[in-house]
Length: 275
Ligand code: GRG
Image (cartoon, rainbow, N blue to C red; front, side, top):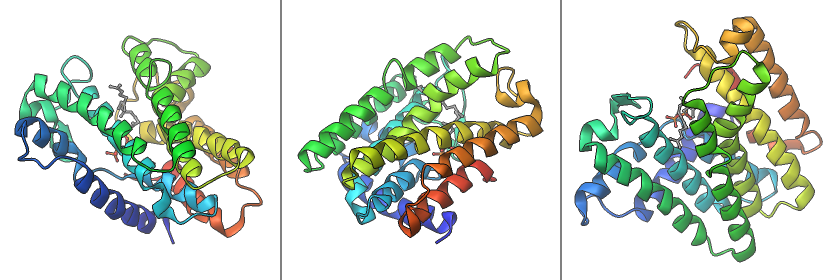
């Protein structure tokens, strides 16, 4: 199955789950619940949830086993986008072809909707029912979303200025790659991956996450962001770095055979995508 088909299937699976897990839009406080759903459904590419499903498959489990992890990572990702779009951050008025949450519902409601989406992520994963694995996945996701990783990376990116590619990669590792690696790891954990496979899949996720961020910068064909790999290495240099990271990621999957094919396809998509 190619990446686009896998992503489409992941999207329909996780969207159904999220639609049932979240309060209805008319349930009080209705304005808050409508705001939570505004950016979540329909979502974006659903790459993080697809990676969680594919990681469960690489561990030899059916993809459905990873559903609570897949939903949780999309909830965290969506909250981060809602807050990233706020006037005090990136100040964007459009996201996924729709008005951003603060444009549609006001700034205070958008802040609260983001907060509640994050809380919902942990509630969904805690409800996975698979005691040990779910709890470990929840902890790993909380760390990836926390002050050293997603939030810390976003914080340090606020007034970031550096011409050092290693420093730029460090911010990208925390702001973008940590959640992607946690998505893979959470899916792998719910799929029952043993420790050595889990470690390999997590390293796969980190490399894919970094390459995904470079691909994101390459998709922007205007003037590059000042502290991006495209600005520092040029388009060809950044492309080469992304391809090297892809190779590094794929090497972690060597010997896993057919069951890791969805992960391989998604990794190639993340790096070579046109959307
Ligand atoms: C506010 C805590 C907090 C964090 C914000 C996600 C983020 C951190 C900033 C978004 C800025 C950005 C464009 C980062 C590049 C990588 C990225 C996360 C792109 C968006 O992810 P996609 O392409 O989006 O997977 P879709 O809409 O497809 O889900």
